[in-house]
Length: 93
Image 1 (cartoon, helix red, strand yellow):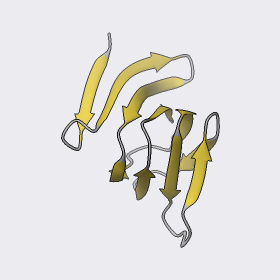
Image 2 (cartoon, one colour; image 1 turned 45 degrees about the vertical axis):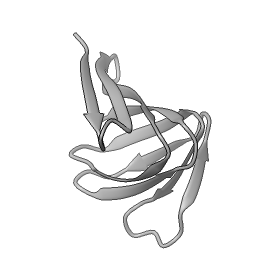
Image 3 (cartoon, helix red, strand yellow; image 1 turned 120 degrees about the horizontal axis):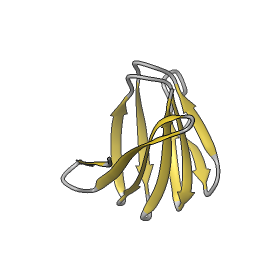
């Protein structure tokens, strides 16, 4: 069935489920700055709003808008800035 997750005092919430491509979550983020860690490779797609992302090894923040996807390697931490309520889908592989 579904599993719900809540992080950062409720400012990030997601629902986990399984797709034919593997485990995934859909979620929402309120404005703020967050640091996430990975245990698998993650493909994160913005479904509405805007995420500014700083991936490991990068020195510049990059903006991702609706229907844009970025990849995060396994076992790293990455930073996210959210300036407006934003939704996403994350596929774990």
